[in-house]
Amino acid sequence: MKVFSYDSAGNKSLVNYDSFTFSGGEEHVRFDQIDYSESVKIEIFERLTHSSKLVKLMMAVDALKRLSFNNVPIELVTPYFPYARQDRVCVEGEALGASVMANFINSLGFTKVTIWDAHSDVSPALINNVVNVPQIDLLKRCEELCKRLATGELILVSPDAGASKKTLKIAEQFNGEPEVIQAQKQRNLKTGEILKTEIIGNVNNNNVLIVDDICDGGRTFIELAKVLKNNGANEVSLFITHGIFSKGLDVFDGLIDAIYTTDSFRAKHEFINNNKIKLQVIEM
Image (cartoon, rainbow, N blue to C red; front, side, top):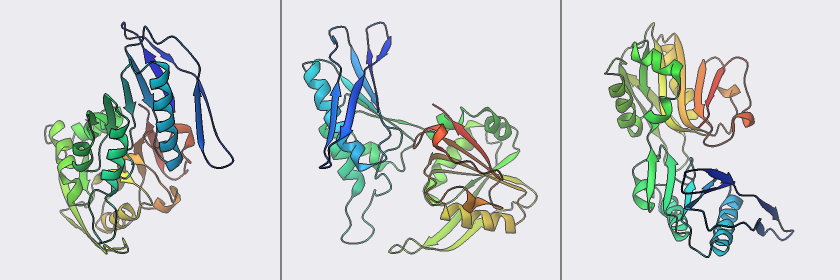
């Protein structure tokens, strides 16, 4: 977690703090005492990738409000919004995770919450004072991909119906030069197992770019890459906003040639490279 104080001229300074976890599991945060009389806002940047970070965030907000006498607006930048994938109740007995997390964030009273490429329209609708940075704005920070898309060198592949709108928006940003192909998958809702993957279109002798928001274990993209390769695709690349890669990159060997992602879920130096796969991390 990084915390910054901004003055009226837009200058920002890092706010120092100490944090640790008590033996009983409680999170503790203590900020250095500074003069907040010149501060016009406080900004917290945190990747909320673990439940303990949620508690630490809650403690940090309370401490900052006390130090500033609750007179300074506090903003949150959390690129990867946790529980965004739980934006509907698919099986009776489940929680609506996106709503639970949004209620938690809202309870902290941020004047602005910035997230990147929300999984669906549900999370931004639930979060107060939210700014959702579109995926295309993040992709445009990769000069290599922009050049290849602008010339039509890459065919865009939407991995499922949920990613269709975003994929089409990317094509529109490049004047429709990239062709867009739709993929479909059938999944067991209870187990999450992918039963079947198919593509609608021709990829033979073409280079393709799969675009989606989140890659966790990668099963969706593994199965899709198999179908693309079997249908004659030359080069298969993947652009993912939030690269979790819980199974590592080795699972993509021989299937995906290049992976582009941001540092939303982890810092660049925390990624484990694979010599057979080109990995480019777009730092924000």
